[in-house]
Every structure is written in structure tokens, then in C-alpha cells.
Image 1 (cartoon, protein in one colour):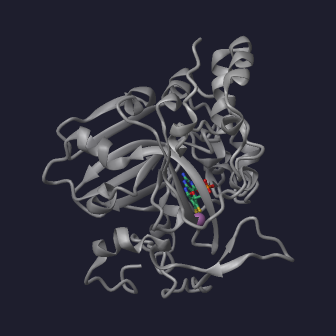
Image 2 (image 1 turned 60 degrees about the horizontal axis):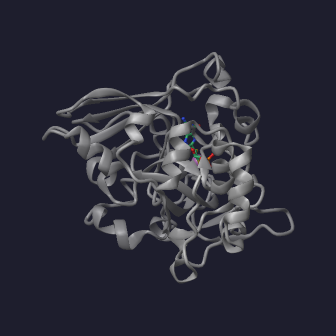
Length: 336
Ligand SMILES: Nc1nc2c(c(=O)[nH]1)N[C@H]1C(S)=C(S)[C@@H](COP(=O)(O)O)O[C@H]1N2
Ligand SMILES: [Mo]
């Protein structure tokens, strides 16, 4: 295999292969090619970026490793922010299908079968269909988007996602004039998702989320298939999850199997569970507190007893320039 070494003068960030990509490529190519690769890659390409330490390559399907080759690295960065270490991002999770505690998803999600995976696109579209994930992703260039993520529980992280704009997928499905909202549904699989079996769970499975059409079409909104230069760990929503960086984390529905274009504002899991606490919009807003705690501040992970790492929460999670216009004239205390 021929390995092209970009000359020094061209070493802008998109030319640099982050260590985890290099690792998953090595797995993809097999050990022999890896040795060659390691010798041929310049030192700066092998140095792991901060936050990427300890990234395991995962077990990507062949199509994913090939997609990585054409990825646009650092397509969007988070100025002045450091990336949350992979260990925190993959071991402090909310994914109630795998249990209520932050460590449950990492402990219990490993056995979820994610390959093959089928996604249904239906509703108010000219081209409804069932797609294998590979076919769904195939026409898109993967982009690395480094986004802040703010959970409604007042903790936050900075995560380098790998995905593509939801807008590009929706356009391919040809939304009709009746498409006013997008509704998303997580896999239903009680056999592999112990939380869905729990008799005491209050959630009406499967987990569902939704966006207004203009929110779904905003260029910041992505569908992610990876993070930290690798496939998504199961606990982070493999193999396909939504990322909407100006909204609270619960809008970022994981392990998506269905995307429907609909006319009415869709049912969403948390709004249904506690409508006075969780709204449909769920925009990050330091001025609108949760009934039981302030939303003015957040704990940035890693956060410990002696270094809580607390910071002020930003309006729209710092993405106001891109999204504030979507809500012009709306009372955000009413439409929380
Ligand atoms: N299907 C599903 N999606 C989900 C959740 C969930 O419990 N089930 N939790 C949400 C919440 S509350 C948050 S904060 C984010 C957490 O994403 P992360 O674990 O990748 O950081 O996922 C969201 N997506
Ligand atoms: Mo959350």
C-alpha cells in the first residue's frame, strides 16, 4: 500500500491524521501494512492531540474505516476549549436503555449489535425508504466537529464528533410541504437494552426526540457516526446519533432507527415524562432555570470534589451567532 506523505508546507489540520484514526486504519489494513504506515508517517502525524489520549480504536466496519480516509478533520473547532478526555466522554453517560447510573451505559452497552443497522426514513418525504447505515452515510463526507455538550443536569463536555449535516440527508429524502418537524426514534431491543425491560422505568420506550424543520436544517445539526476519530462507542449512541450543540444533551437521541418528517410537533420522551421540567425546545439558556436547580452554571468534566471546574453557562451554549435568529420573537421562558 502506498502511503502519501504530505509535504510540510501542506500540513494544515485537515492533512493531519489523528492518532485514533491511525490506529483504526492500522486495524483495517492489518499488521503488516501498519508497520510500514508507522515508519512512513511523519512524527507530527503520530502525536495524539490532547484529549485523544487512551482512545481505543473500537471495532469499525470496513466502510467506516474507508470513510475516515476522506474525512475533513477539524471542520469546526471550539475556540479556547480543551477536548474532554475520551475516558470521561465514554464512561460518564446518560443512556437509560442501559441503566440509570452514569457508569451503566459503558458497563452494559457493549453487547448491542450495531452491524448491520437499518434506518427508516418516512413521513412527508418524496423518497421514503429503508437504508443500511453504510448506504445512508455513503454519499456524505465525514466532518470532525468539536462541540460543547451541555446536559440539562448542569454538567458539560467538549467532544470531537465525526458526522455529517442532518440537512444533507433530509434534502436527499425530498421533504414535502407538509414537513414541519422531524421526529427521531431509538432502537427498541429489550433483549440487549436492559433498561427497556425494567418494570419501574417511567419512560415509554422507545426513546423519541424531535426538532423543528429549521432547527434540523441548521448547519450545526449533525448526525454522528463517530467521535475521537473512531466509531461511536455503543454507550455514546452507536451507530448513529443526533448532535444539536445549542440544545440540552437529551435532544441528542442515540442509536437512531427511524427519522420521520411530520406536520405536527412530535412526541418527545422527556417532555412527555415531566412537561414542567423539560420542554420541546430545550435550548441551553442560563436565564431559564430548571424548577429544581439553576442553569446559570455548569460543571465541566473532568470535575472532582477538589477541582469542580465550574463555569458560566452560555446562551445557546455559545452558538447564538448561528442560531439565535431561529427564535426571534419567541418567549424562551415559555418555550423552554
Ligand atoms: N436513546 C437515548 N438517547 C439519549 C439518552 C438516553 O437515555 N437514551 N440520554 C440523553 C442525554 S440526557 C444526554 S446528556 C446525552 C448524553 O450523551 P453522551 O452519553 O454521549 O455524552 O444523550 C442523550 N440521548
Ligand atoms: Mo442530559
